[in-house]
Image (cartoon, rainbow, N blue to C red; front, side, top):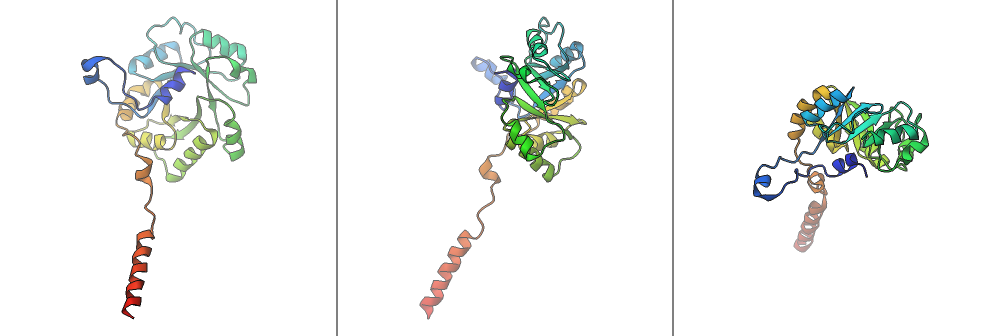
Length: 242
């Protein structure tokens, strides 16, 4: 299992620590993780220092394994990945890779202990999404505007997450605020991808996202039940009067 997948799985847990002092200084748990899109190892280093939960860089990250300042999961993105390229990236310190299923060699998915994130693209019909569910993915990468999310768009994101069986890594077009991040999280996108320069601001917004509401609290009451019972009793009262 990749470290990136573990980070998504453990979302909402407070940072670890031992003793009373560690607990007292514990950060409030976050419910959205922030992934940085970096153009170079230098950008990746800056994103890690800003607090990014994971980083994605283009191609094989030369010198990444030797860079002790980057202690978060690092992913690589290939235009058309081969198994040898993915294996080389893993040797260089990469934890997962982002791929286009129409161009990536099938053998690229066989590299052990290497996570995978599918670039979903615009083709999101039901048959395709269900076929994606057959692949063991860390996440699916989807793009969305950060200025507004409608109920219909939220439902569409939920549909993608449900049919693919994978969490959504959502590339933000624009800088998202806490309300947008919460709506995305509730739609099955607990991870957001932003440019390295936007990591600090996005982390600040992510810290303001509240814990998910319990599903029972979102359910509508069953309408009519108590009313019918009351009506039934009322009818009996009239019958008794007769």
